Image (cartoon, rainbow over all chains, first blue to last red; front, side, top):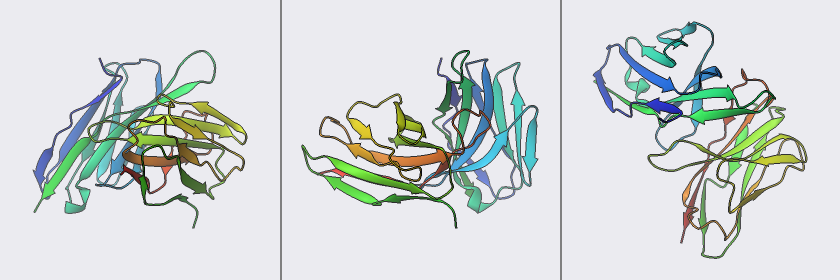
Length: 114
Length: 115
């Protein structure tokens, strides 16, 4: 099983739709989680950090389910400008020390159509 | 404006040549990172640095070298030993390495192509 898994998509949705992506992780010691957005041929940009039970920022809601080891990203009222690849990132502690590792998912591609 | 800059945007390498990618940040971040991104693959960590004059190998360090002589600069050299260097190279920084809540911020990237 991969350490971080995402459905690559693509998800094709009409403007105004609600769309959700999931990201599963294998390491139960994972401590923090992030969603990044990456536009074609550009660098990843932080979309949201996900702590404890999740958080919301405008049209975007991120949820964490530790029991089932997944995080989700919900986008409401999709805009054309939301078209991008969404990367799931998991940070977990490697051992009893301070060594941590950031694992990146391959991303989920979203295309919002007019 | 604070941020991370990378240069050049595109870089062409000839066989057997070493090339150096520049990364500079003015965010006063302690930690800096180099990643490589290939089509269909996630970001893979090449090297990272927690503090000046210290750096550690990531998952795919072979064929690469780095230095961290100044807090704001973390150049990456792609040596001739790297047999498949064509990729999108991303530099990132974060305030600290040891805090799990720290997010990473990326530069615009350098596309390296082999002639």
